Length: 308
Image 1 (spheres, rainbow, N blue to C red):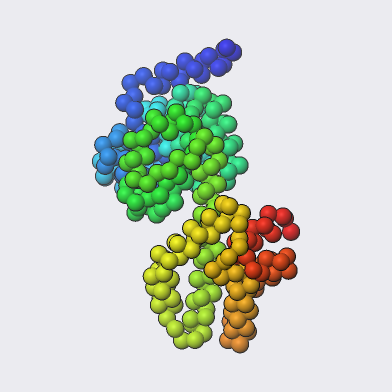
Image 2 (cartoon, rainbow, N blue to C red):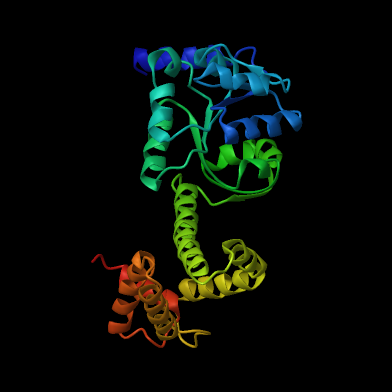
């Protein structure tokens, strides 16, 4: 074994001496603070740290220990749960010489939003430092942590099994997606894709409501009340995507394309922006031209797998 690697191994082993298996929570924004509180409430040992010291005060007042520095936190914990702004920031914090020498043998759990490519790169970097790696997607709001949060996890299966108490403290709905370190990040982006596009639909719906003297708040209530039937439709469309079978739709691409024609006509008549429906209509019309009119709307996936 090269001398540098041997030294790092010894340093890593020394850093573990005297630890009580505390979990180091790095990043104390709204989500990181919620995580630290949930772990503490479950009786797990927590040591927290934030780049801006003032953010540590709120968790300190809840009885949670806070480290004076990142090297102190890393030396005192064998699990590092990172909730900061991105994977690159994690590398910049942990891979500095003053910190990296104490990483060997620890587990890194990254729960920041990122891309699958970033998750794979961080997994490789963590393993090069002798760490186990888990990638987590928090498909929830901070107030849901410790209760109903939906959390997806992927990565090292042994690390997953060893941290069941940690994830149980964060939620009763934690789903392990397998050994690929990129799986959780991929699901996170996929879910966020759905919501970001849905937000645009809500914005244009609000424009229609305002133009016709309706309360946009009432629109939001109607949408919320339809959530159960929407969930059934989403499952149906998901099954179609899984099977690759798009026949016998409840409402076909052609039907929805006709709906978009009416939405665009209203926008012109009401003198409101048609930017959002025009963008969607361009994709739908491509699907119509490709012969998908009588299939489920999600048959568009066949078209959009091909760039351009």
